[in-house]
Image (cartoon, helix red, strand yellow):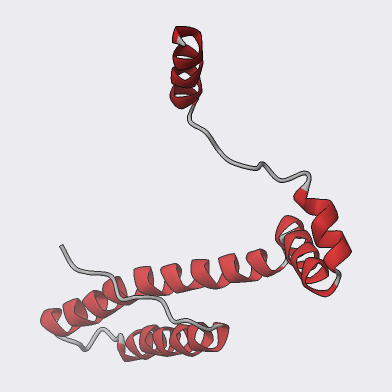
Length: 118
């Protein structure tokens, strides 16, 4: 199985790679002609066949990045984190609503068993 190439870290990197792949597909389409041999046509189809899924993956990643930036829940979380950094009273107020400790249900029932045995 072929290993997927990691996605670029930035939107600009994605845009650059998208443009490169679109260029490769465009070049393959421009070279297509009835005068080409079967092997040459097969080579062009192979180029498009390898490039198109990679282009689709990059376009999906680009869309996901754009949607993530506009996610209202993510924007609200970020705004609240920034407020907590700048406003200690707000952070203290918010602490009372955060769960103090996550305890597995089995651990809670074991604690009750130990208390009743004592």
